[in-house]
Length: 441
Image (tube, rainbow, N blue to C red):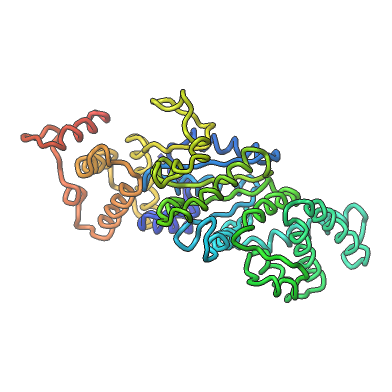
């Protein structure tokens, strides 16, 4: 069987990330297993967003179940489909609202990670603007047969820029947003780096006072804790108007909202989530997708979770017919079940091949040994705890590293040989035997 040759930079990212138990930013397609129905549901969301709609999804699962992996996979799919994407992990310092600028901190994180197909690692703000200007210039030169140094070129380009920005002025904060974009254009046109940087700082939410904004850019507002989400809606509109399909926002570690001890502060954050949810569901936002990752407890706990906020609970609770073994991928919550044993085995085989490619050796671990490793994990963790992919992957990467770096070590020494039918049974044996029976070992 010929394995796909993976570039060294991708194997490096995959090996390093998976060893550390974190989700790689690149190369996920080489380790993706399962989740087809969830991915297809979100790809349908993307189609709607590209047509001017909006979407909001909560993606829930236990720690280590693959929430972050799915969010990152969707992020990469979105860039390939010409969306602008932005992602941020929530933390005690980054929330949706807060008395110490935690909402603005989230906006800044999103803008830092603003990415496109040509700038997948973040920092795409300036390249998005410059690509827009360059596209307009090319369009004008072609249509009007103008040369690059023709004075009429800048005049026509400026008019087309103002056509886009003037259409946005009727939106909330749209006038000031358009004015700052125009200021950036003027700095770009005149090679005035100070003016360009002032505009970029404002757009990134880094101008601290209205006085400074007025002095540098002639606008009387700044992006702050209260209005940052309105500007994300402007970014989604703007992205679509300049040739992208829209803007997708990925917010992970939302369990940090659940952990807020002050009930008033926690409810304020849930209220902001409700606003975002309503905007996307009711058509008040266009070309915008919001995907939030969190634990089931973050959603369903009726004392501190989203279900403690009745307006959210009534919108998110499962309908009468979903559940009880039936799935519904059109609802606002995508619940990630644990990967099946077969899917985990496929994943581990992929890891064997990636590890061997990266370190340049011929893999020697057999399919039967991978199953034996899995059986060991079942016995150690118990069937109900098994297959949080993160734990299994970290253990397996540790095994591969140890075998590679210690040639005298054998798989059997590290994992231990196990008889299929032990002489003496213990409470874990039934689980292990059931697991082995699945694969007829």
